[in-house]
Image (cartoon, rainbow, N blue to C red; front, side):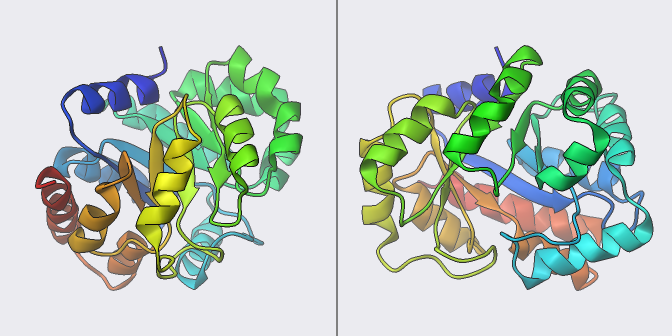
Amino acid sequence: MNKITLTLDSLKKQKKKALVLFLTAGYPKIDSTISLVLELAQAGADIIELGMPFSDPLADGPMIQASSQQAINNGITLERILGQVNEIRNHSNIPLVLMGYLNPILHYGGEKFFADARNAGVDGIILPEVSLEESARYLFLTRKHHIADILLVSPATPEKRIREIDKVSTGFLYCVSTTGVTGRSSVGDINSYIKRVKRNTKKNPVLVGFGIKTPADAQRIALHADGVIVGSALIQRIAQGNSITQIGYYVKSLKKGLNTI
């Protein structure tokens, strides 16, 4: 069974909520990724998403866009990201999800990318620009290489479509809390929205991302969800020059908030 599913099943049995953290690979320096991932894992992350930088990231807000551009300037590539994943696997078994856009994957070669990703130790993939209908083009590759194909729903997603997306998605359902880009505040009635998604989801755990910044945010949203995803707020702390120890303290505070539910 995929490590993402094993991790989320274990947390559910323990009646705990999942903490998923997003890092931009190759940021702030090209060789920062490995040490940051290992610190996040030690501090309490359950799953880590690694952003694959792209020059036109449609779903990302200014903070993650800036980190992606810096990583590109640093010389990050898909080859180097997979090499970093392989090195992380020498030290940690934490589930790793790659998040990014199709263009670099197509340039790399779809079949080769998914094969190399699995061999490196990747457990899941999130492609925000790929719709439910388009995802069918890649399902045979993700399933062939045992990589979870994680799809997204938003406040604008009709209930029937939520059910259809849940049937196709594996690992978890990424529940976007806004109708905009990453880093924005959550929709007003977030609890009703999450409950609506949960009512129409039978297969996957529901994890909520976009706009979660504080332990209080994480706690409030996780009351009804199976976990939270934090990205822009973490990238912002890295951009502000927080030390790796300070980053660890921030992660521990998020985890503590979730553990008090």
